Image 1: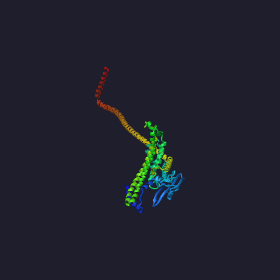
Image 2 (image 1 turned 45 degrees about the vertical axis):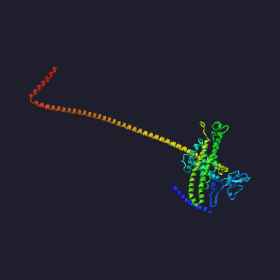
Image 3 (image 1 turned 90 degrees about the vertical axis):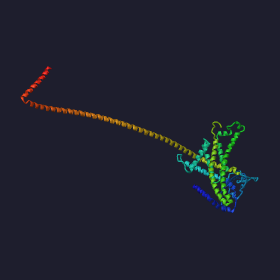
Image 4 (image 1 turned 30 degrees about the horizontal axis):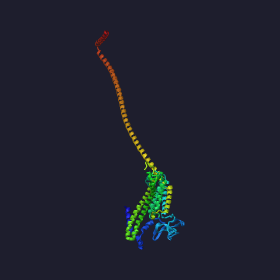
Length: 358
Length: 171
């Protein structure tokens, strides 16, 4: 109750500070706020990491751009070159069209085209690196705790205890019941997937530099994770699994001469990673979008009228806090669901011998 | 629509990063943790099982203990009862023995007393005989103080002796 009272007090004070901050900025130029641009700039990948803006000075982390173009061969340069010049060595960041925001070059006919290979270390990639590093640190650190102890020692407390609790929860309630008897083989993979997604989601909720990037809300990242599950499922699938795809237990006219059922089964196999991808990516993207939209309410209404803006700040902050808490939940749930679906798919690829057919 | 189009570069880096993370965690991370957790779980299970067995054993021991105590108590009662019986028996015997002894002593004493009485009686009789003889002597002396009387007495005595002889002869 006391804690709640503090929050209420904070919310009451916020309009004052909002007004105090907003007045000098809005007094000068009555600019309209392009919410769509703000949101899209955030949720999309970019070649530099914009951290914050102080006054008129943008603080950005320039990132390396690595390209292979049929025109110039391998290229490596810093993204900061685009602050000085719009076109560098024939490359520029597209301002519209289907490649908006990506580095493009002009082909011989003067059309925009992407370089053959663009493996630039973008904001999302750097974010992935940071997350990978943190994840390795956390898990290997936890493992070191165990290495120094015997099973007969007392159970861990503190952070290692939390890790153990989460690991047991995932293994016992997700992996074990869904994968089946061969679950032990997949535990490291599924735990890696779970913690990778969880940590990425949580880092995405941090509003400042090492976090804040929309990583799992990027379709490529989600797709990469889903591809890993897809590979695991199909590499380790047993004979029964492949028999059910290519020669399922149905009347013969359904599988020969026209392989109807096999086609349907094959589509099912290929659809599974997409289900994983879209679920994860759409959820996180929606979370980031909603959060930014709520924060943008302040600036949109402030541009209209200072008093409405001040009043709406309360609403905005309240909803932003609400969304943030909700997103904490979503961060966990999405990691959980992704791991669970992966477990289910792996479990489906390990069918035990049916006792009485289908 | 670029939001929905996967980017090859990003896909490549993500796969690479995930692969590296997976390999590192597979080698130095999760298997260590999970095997340790399993080992501890097994240890705890075993310890619990052991505790359960120990408890059961303890309960059994308590039961046995109680049975033993009951048994001992029963035996104690028995012994006490037997002791009482034996004591009574002994006391009875002792009393009987004492009674018999007493009777014996009393009988002996009675005999002794009888004997002494008889002795005393005999002594008195002897004394009385002596006195009687003395008295008789004195009486005779005073009776036979005259010659007449002496004569008469002798004649009577002779008669008596004759009677006695006559009766003896007649026989």
